[in-house]
Length: 94
Image (cartoon, rainbow, N blue to C red; front, side):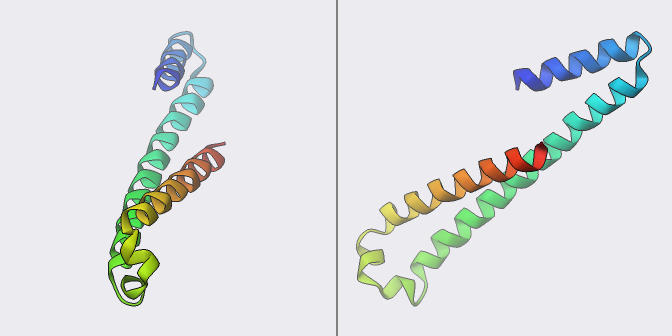
């Protein structure tokens, strides 16, 4: 968040000094990164919900390893999905 605020401040200062191209590039980059972060967050929450729902449904709900340790499996799936989301967000914003 601090990096974003610093980049926006640099964009404002660049625009004040007449470097409109630099300000536009920095401002557009911050805007795209914000939309991408929102998209990745929503995608992560949807996939976490779908995975939690899948653990209850047939055939995974009938497996003894899943039914006995559903919360452990769910936490591990959420952790894996979070790591994938961070990698996706970082890779796509670069």
